[in-house]
Length: 369
Ligand code: SF4
Image 1 (cartoon, helix red, strand yellow):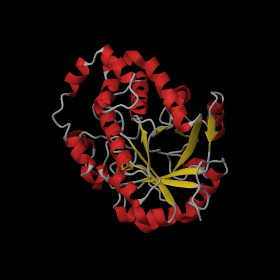
Image 2 (cartoon, rainbow, N blue to C red):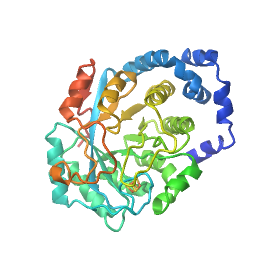
Image 3 (cartoon, rainbow, N blue to C red):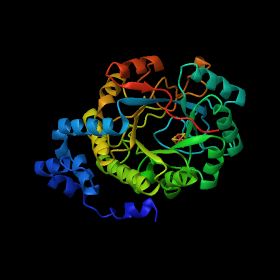
Image 4 (cartoon, helix red, strand yellow):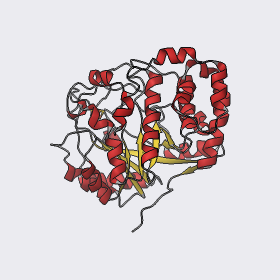
């Protein structure tokens, strides 16, 4: 069985009818539970539950402190190339955009690693587009092995790979995988991914499971909010996380709810998500998945991210640059993948976390040997 079969169970489900029938009593009943099931998650995602954000926030905070303490882990993304064979309508690196393309040399990657390590960050997320002819597996493997010298934890956010490729990367020290399905609705997926290997919906959907099978310590998934119908997208992401969590006990399963930001090409979200809805979705996921890490990236504004700290978040990116080579050479910050809303330096993000009584953590894990 794969998660695809779980999705198929909801193919004819009447989401709109379910949401319209949710009552206040249903929401209160779900809030009173200790363990919440699939239908409970739907209740918490319903428009009716939007009137219960305060009790949801109290319960989410309590659960998060119980499982994670008052800590927020920090990480930083590093783009090593922006070549890409795919045509994702919402992305600045889309192959149809006439932008400057760059691929860092190993020397440049080492310079980026040193510049980031100097900020105190020890958890790195490495990204690249999908361009096997320009950035083949050997290049990616060498880049990651090099970066591992500077960081306690190196994770990847790259195109989906076969289990064997994930094993290869694990062998050079990669310990985590972030892979967003972007949109669980298969019809919308086909519409917004117009060319390239990423058009293979199933290969992408099953990739987090292949990563867990390959032995990655952490696997992080999520929808790109704005593409599909929002409540059902968050619902499917929640189910996907529980599916993985139930089967791969040695893997920490995490979630993220990135919202579409402006990028080259001017794509507009098909289903915009308000701040209030974002908070509701985050709280609903925490109540459904008490042990899941929840990440909020610098796509969100600084003041908004600060307000989210006590509401169930466990990881924040900080000091991010989504241009290629922009840490060691800031003049290279041209044409990012998307616009960054929170542009604060690492130290300022850490200060804002500490000001709320939480501990910012730059390193909470190390590999043995
Ligand atoms: S989202 Fe990823 S795969 Fe799609 S165009 Fe951008 S870099 Fe390429």
